Structure formats: structure tokens, C-alpha cells
Amino acid sequence: MKTFSLIIVLLFGSLLVYCTLDFPSWGDPTAPASLHVSPRYIEQTLDETSVPNIVTAVLADYRSYDTMFETIVIFTAGVACIILLRTYQRKKQLGGMYRHVPTGITLRFKEDVQLPKDSKEFEHIDLEWVPYDIIIKTACRLIVPFSQIFALYVIAHGHHSPGGGFQGGVILGASVILFAISHNLRATLGRISERAVALLCGLGVFMYAGTGLICMIFGANFLDYSALAHLLPLSPVAARSFGILIIEIGVGIAVMAVMIQLYYNLASAGKHDEGL
Amino acid sequence: MIVDAVTLLLVSKINYWIYIVLMMLGLYAMMTKKNLVKKIIGMNILQTAVILFFISISAKNNATIPIIEHGQTSSHSGVQAVDYINPLPHVLMLTAIVVAVATLGVALALVIKLFNQYGTLEEDEIIARLEE
Amino acid sequence: MIWQIELIILIAVVICGIGAIAVRDLLGAAILFGAYSFMMCLLWAIMGAVDVAFTEASVGAGVSTVLFVATVFRTSRRTKD
Image (cartoon, rainbow over all chains, first blue to last red):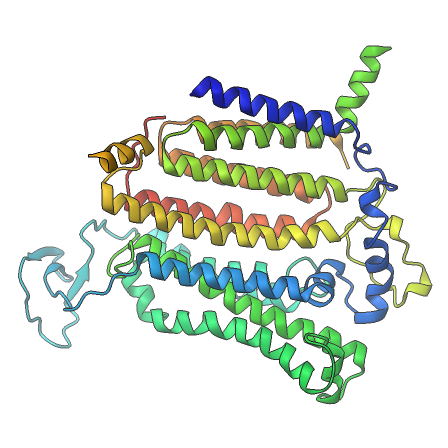
């Protein structure tokens, strides 16, 4: 079996080598790939959308159908992860490991226990609990707000510098994941609940498609942002730039929510009780 | 003479040769590795090899990154296509990377589900369990 | 574009890729895959694809490594090959 696979892989590789011999050499400006559509994008983008970053303009304006369905693919992946993994417990189990904070003693209950209601002395901990490291906890607490500010900057400044909705959304999601790793999953779920994450997933896609629908209401094509000029005191060119910003925010929300959702489900194997 | 030609061929298309190596590596891992997580890593290597190929297509000598320089206000002030790298493959690959992580999430969810069902990640052990 | 730097990074990419599929420990494979993604991101930054490099740095080297580690935490580290 191994030699058979090796033969197939080598055949595949030699076929690719044979095809590559006909390629134009690397960095050739007259290569066929650089001659057809892209010169128009490079030369007309600034006139038509007033966005200096050509990648953002092509992503969110010229090829926005493509990006919209990519966002829907990501949304679908989040939904698929819930369907595959999420398990709901009928009864909330109260047994488990509790830690008495002032003394540091860990208690394990096999049956349901009734703890004093608003007592801060007992803390529910994971089965594979390791003592918190003060250095890691403090460092991550410091990093999280700065990375969130940076993510907002990346989303908002995507017109003029590398960045945009996808990158900013992933960084926002990563900041929440960092919080979950340095503390625990239960604390994170207390800040961003599962319901909020699921709603944000839908909200991002809805913002994207809704912008397209608003454009249709004003008589333009789906996702033709120059129609937003009827709604706002902007010229059609500036309206296109503004429309790009709106859908970048939508993409950012959807991507952030899906990343958090994937993490929640994978780290707790669908139980959402304890995790990494 | 022939040595020079071969060196030129190797140097002028080095990205393409590396992408072929990575693609073979990913395909080999997907075909022969028994562990499911290893298979997923092979799939991701294959994906990045394809992305490397697309990005290599877009490169241009003596050109800058596809962000129009500050101070340019319209195309009449001289935005030339040869001065900027082809942005179209970048756009396609940017979305491909994010979709890759979404598919990775679904694949890993399936792996966890299989582990909960069969208690192993090895493909041959799972098949042996199925045949019991 | 400096081809010497690019050559070094290309070799590092191939080494990390081979390491990620050859190492007999899934946690090590996940970490090596993160290193592979980061090398790939450097390569794209050198080739001028800044947006793609940015995405790969946040997605490939960040979130997918975390997802792999979470999966290994929930399943097992053991692998036969």
C-alpha cells in the first residue's frame, strides 16, 4: 500500500513538473495571468471606489458576491460544528470539583450538592484543573484589550492598509480564545454566552446581505453600493467606499463569532462545561 | 552550457518547484498516514501548497504591493499596471484561507465525534471495530 | 525581493512540513504545523502579498493551531505513524 501510494504521488509530481516547464518564469510582468482582468482593477480602482488598497476593493466591491458566499460558507461551518458536537444535558449536574478559595482545599462531590447561594468562597473547577499561574493570567489580561483595539483598527483601516474584515474578525476571535485559554471556559461563557455568539454569527451575514438588499431597494443591482448615495449625503464614489466599510464590519462580526463557536465546541467536545 | 540552463531553470521557478514538493508531501500524508489528525494536517499542507502556487503566479518583478501610493488621486496621475503586483490571486486566496480554517473546524469536530464513538484515532482500528 | 532570504524560508517551510507529518506525537505535530504556517506567512510577506500574509498569520499560525491543540486535548496524543 505504501509503495503504491508513493508511485501515485511520484507520478502526480512528475506530471506537475512537466506542466511547470511551460510556465513563464517567476516574476515575469508579461505573464498571461497578469494581463487580463487585473490591469483594469489596478488602474480604475482609485477612480471608481476611492479605496487605495486594491485587494480590499476587489474583495468587497468588485467580487462581493464571491465574498458573500464565502461568509455563508463560514457561517455554515459554525452551524455544522454545533450540529455535529453539541450535546445538551437535561439536568444540570451539581456534583463535581469545588475549591474552597481561602484555604485552597479541593472538595469532590459525587452527588448533587446545594452550595450556599451567593457564597464567594467556593469555586467550581474543572476535573483536570491546574493551579492558575499568576504570570500567565496577568499577562493575558493585559494583552486581550490591546489585541481587541488592534482588531478594530484592522477592520476600520482596511481601506488604506493591509487588513479588513477577515483578519480583524479572526484577531477579535483570537483575543476571546486567549482569554479562555488563560482562565477557563466557564469564565469565558459568562462573558460571551453561547446564545450571543450564535446571534452574532447570523448578524454578520445579515448585515452583508442586508446592505445588498438596501442597494436593490434604491434601484441598483444587488451589492452595488453606489446606490447608498441616495440614503447618505455622499457622492456615489464615496458611497462605494462606505459600503465596503459596512460589509467589512459584517464579515468581521461573522468571522469572530464562528471562530469563538468552533473553539467552544472543540475545546469542550460539545458539552460547554469545562475545557482547555 | 546545460548546467547553466538547468541552474537558470531551477532559480527562475524555485517557488513552483517548492509548491510541487509541498503538494506531493500533502498528498502522501493524506494517502498513507493512518492517524486522522495527521491526515487533516496533510490536507492543510496541500491547501497551502495551492495557495503558494496562486501567490507565485501574481508576482511581478520591480513592482510593489497592491496598495496605491499616498498622494495618487486618480488614474490620470499615472497608476500603471506594471507598477503593482497582480491583486486578483491575493483576493481569491485570502478568502480561501479563511474557508480553510472553517473546514478545518468541521473536520476536527468529526474527529472528536469519531473518538467518542470508537475510542481511537487510528483509521485501521476504526475499520476493525466496524467489522466486528 | 532578496532571493537568498526566500530560499532559506522555502527550505524551512519544507522542513517544517516534513516534520509535521513525520513526528510521532500529535501535540508536536500541531505545534510544527503552526511553525509551518508562520513560515508560509513570512514567504508571502516577502512576495508582496501582504493581505494574504496577514490572514495566514492570524488564521494559520493562530487559530488553527489552537483548534488542533483543543482537539488533541479532547482526544489523545497517541499516534502510530
